[in-house]
Picture 1 (cartoon, rainbow over the protein chains, first blue to last red):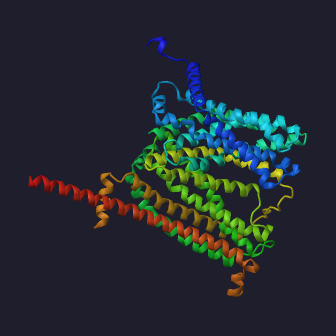
Picture 2 (cartoon, each protein chain N blue to C red):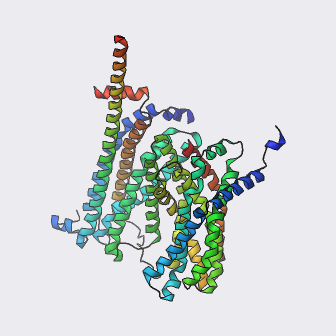
Picture 3 (cartoon, chains in turn blue, orange, brown):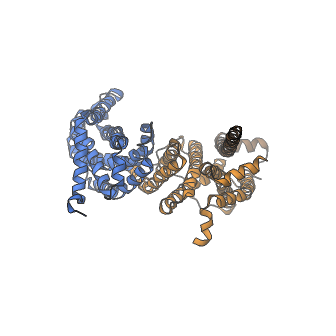
Length: 230
Length: 247
Length: 69
């Protein structure tokens, strides 16, 4: 076989990643809408609960994280959809390259497009919710380590429902329970930080969840994609 | 053992096997449940602290432990389906999920009805209650994905994946919920201390538990038969069977 | 026997409502599960039987058409 036709794993990873990013940047709405959704949900909470700074500060970690979960969920739907519809997904599955690599690239592309905007906007929103400044760094770290976990776990659901017409609600039904551990450890890390307590332990657990998700979920995602493309 | 198990990978053999065992399981379950529940409700002594509300225990605890056992069984079936590509395993997953969901719902409901007189509230965000609620969500997810696909084979595979992902996550969820609970709960709920159960209370429990376990076996076999038939509806053996039964 | 009378049995030492609520819910849930499982099996069987009958009819019709030609 000619050397020129064979991609190294790293090149394959780069190729899929840059392709996904390019496609997404040409449809900017897909990137902006989940972010807008995140901001609007966070705005709704003070309107529903009342503007007392103390109450808001107490529930701010929960609000930020639940909104992040929902915003991620909203964006999951399009992770494999267009590739499924135009047949690119099937070609990728048929390609001789290990699916682990390109699945990883696709999920990381999704995280760059949804997770990073959330991380960037979160401090502004945290300030609006009167979160004490001590917890800002904790919010950043939990989002940095936690949102990729959301992308990885969510990708399983996205892969399973990609062939279904009304997959959206189903996706949230099967994925949201699996997000519980991330939610618990992330919010408690932010809580601990607001009291000036160390939160390294919680971060370590979220990091462990990330490593576990990184290594295990691509296999589940691949077999889910195989079921969907049949 | 593999040689002995091999014929049961054949849907026809397994269909007839479950057909044969259903009456046995059904009778065992019916008689054990009758004995056990009469014993539990009429003859078992009341708890010295909780009085007669303790009798909910005989329904609540078997339902709760079976709800977890069924999930484990479902996940094992899903794993077998993944590893050996057994189509019957997917059918078993599809058959077990609704049964498990019903038992989880019973455990939750009876827990609430027991908690009201004992703790003074229907629901507390206790670690065990919360994990049981999450377990119900996981079951409902498996059922929902199983119903979402038109094609039964695809549905079974998809449900297997979700069952497996769920079983890996279940310990993590349980651990995190317990940890969350100890962190957030201000006044700890006076949990039901485990007094050394007297034998008079223990034996009716064993009988009830076995009765419910055989009940699960019976219903699962019935649902398993349905799933096998739906998956093999164009096979000759199903056609012959249907023609025989129509006579 | 722990109870002196039927009323005492139904009262369950004051906890009657909760005990019978639990057992009532359990009974209804389990009965529904059994009945639903049985009816699903019956429905699957009758669906398959119906399909076999239509297939046979189609086959017969096709044969008759061939004979007429």
